[in-house]
Image 1 (cartoon, rainbow, N blue to C red):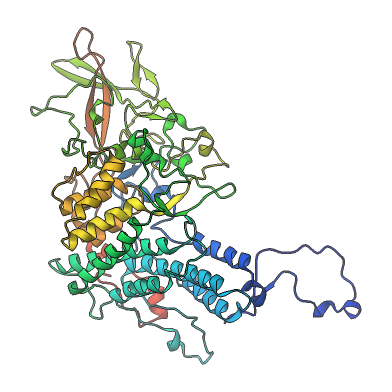
Image 2 (tube, rainbow, N blue to C red):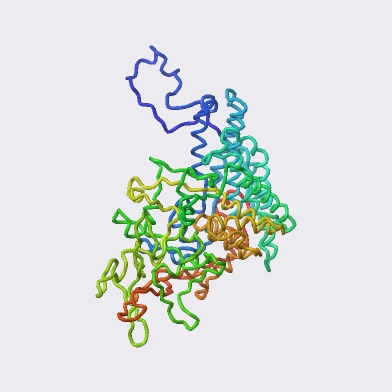
Length: 613
């Protein structure tokens, strides 16, 4: 039951000694460490403080800027401390991705009811604004629930126990999966025009933020409706808690496209593009520049509220603390998903048709003319960081017995010719706090040296929604609706962010759409859920060692030491499977919907289990 008071964690110090209760009525005084409902719900600043707490609690797969999370999304591996937690032996367990936070929903429902009851001194504009923000957060939470669990109980009011000994009134069954998506859509329609005080805000919800949620959530619903039905054995339950009828797909795609088009047409948002600046630099900076007009909604960080992503992932030789750094090693598969600017596939040309090494004059020659988003996402051999060259070189190749022999040394070691043997940044196979693949992550890693030092750490923000995603959402929805403008949305992103010529894609396919999402949205918490909603995760992560996408590979550069030969001083590249990557990633049918905790089912027998659990 609701208490008469909401207790804050701000205690007032007692400044004077106690005096007789008979003399000054001490026992009749209002408590000084409590705020009444009437005070709280009529003070805009206090309501905003509560909202800040709710914004801060908004969920991602395993937490914002959680370094471990990104290693589990296929496109990187763990190169941090000696692996004790299975980072590179990932089993997608039955509960992987599980989320069931009804305490959070209860808090939001209580806030909405209290505001309706007590906020008599707020004007209607203020009440509508706060109501819209609370409901946006609740809709977002339900989206996080449904995309992991399928249909869940839709609770929009307090559940209050009557003390009768019969808890059945508190036990709600799961809604249909489609009903949860329909609830999210209806909430957005109800609130989208009530954000009159946060227009243009990037850290509080507004109309465009609500439409961004509509764009994403309705795309997910449409995908599940279409692609689940195309499986040889569609995943479903008898009551519709899991599975959406294929007949609903078009309607969801239309709702997604409608929202995307409204956002794209809004002049307050635009793809990040600084004239005269290299495209790769632009793509990196859009995540670091808090004046960026591409970001729609972000979780902000500032002095006193910082994160350790730069500390965890800064390139080895740039670290300041003796521990940490270089935990994420992006995969070769990700790097090769970035196409060449001439339109050819991104497969790196390390050997010729006869299987001979191709020698490049410069260490970064193999990456020349690649999609600029690669530079903004991944640090590869020959890259610069913080205006200094990154020292990525695995070793030296010497010509012996008719072929190249590859030699390696310790980090920052020198070969007998007086030049580098192994670079200060590796790569080094089966080592810790140094890349094991030959690549480092650039996206989100701050160039400010102080941001990699404890306790100050980094304060760059985490974009929840940005315009690049909305363009890709629009492209996918339009493609599914067989609208010709679908390719225009893809081409716009490729031109502005990737540096491709205008209209580089003439014929759009599902494979192109899916690859564009992979390269544009790498490490932004999309890939795991994208593969699930397309119903291809079990095929991409099939557990087979022969699958180059299920297994993380790397690419090691070697300097040729062959005096008197034209290739002397050039570079060749060797594909490797890092020793620390133990097992191919294996996504089972049971992983399309996470298991529901048995304690939840024990407390509520109306809850239906998910398939395969």
